[in-house]
Figure 1 (tube, rainbow, N blue to C red):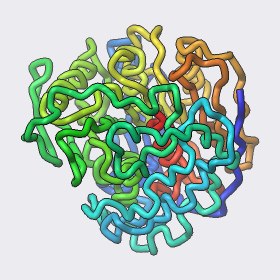
Figure 2: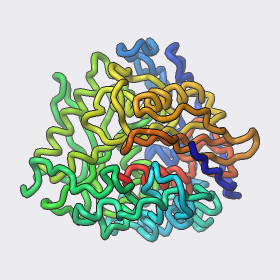
Figure 3: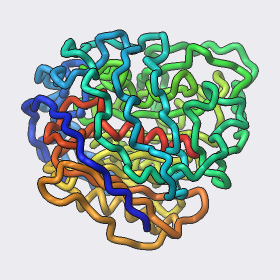
Length: 457
């Protein structure tokens, strides 16, 4: 096992009030401030009122997903300087100090993060995304982006020099696919879906389909430079309890730079993104209902658009993390990798024996979905991926930083990465040096690390 210890950033975010909630199977009110993370387009912090559980699968908490708090308009955490006001193409700094994935060597297990820079200077996507959707007027990320957040000081991912998906026809000139872990399907040309070569009928925006006898909705973002002859990466991003698909798509107070947990900016028009809407704004997944919804979306999308069937990914925060974990357990033959932010077993895990590339991100201070619970999810895939069991280091109390551990001994192509942070509590967008749970979508180190993790494949 190798560990990458990260340095602190002086960036401080304005704290906002969040609703306290329980992520346990006893299901008390669960407030996710999607760190938002800029997360909630409806007001920034969109605290989740998560009487999660409810999932009939896996013995989760009773009570379903009462939106007791829904997406509270806590006023957003715009003070963090979300760079969205510029219409998304702001230099949010986001990718500026991608320091995170410095190519200083090592940790070839995850590959990918080398030199990604990802969307550096993306400014991104002239589409402007939903930039300005709440846009923080405080000057965006002029504070230097990942200023000193350091990302991973040892970089580690330099390993893969294959250029990621270069062989696939290059996503955005390879920029967003830098890295790739050679030998772990990094240079694979992928498996084209039935939609390749067709004139698409799906468009960016909101869609509704029938699934399990219900009308189910999702938001979609198709690259402006979509090529129906090039198989595209497909990423599903699940909202937190009380959140919405619009929150994930819009990026909340951080706007475009936090759209789809910051990965849309990093993708630079290389990737198709989907943000599904959970029933009752949660992911109880009764009887596998939400998994069937995912199956139905995949069927529709792959039949209409040119998708690389070998590069499907899932990610989500809190309840959305629980749903991503359920996908890892039950759809390991469909999804290549998942990223679970502050998750818990809330949506079930009916199988959980097959390998999937897994990244977990969790605060040692998380009062909502406890750290030990997140470790338990991670250890499922330490076992499934045949990694060498370890006890990854966690940041010291008061350090306000993060440590990323890349497990050794894992099956080729099935890495497990654990990112532990201290300072902030229940959030997908921590910023080194800060204790704020909200805001930070423009400067958090998580979006760079998750992007690098996904694009190694």
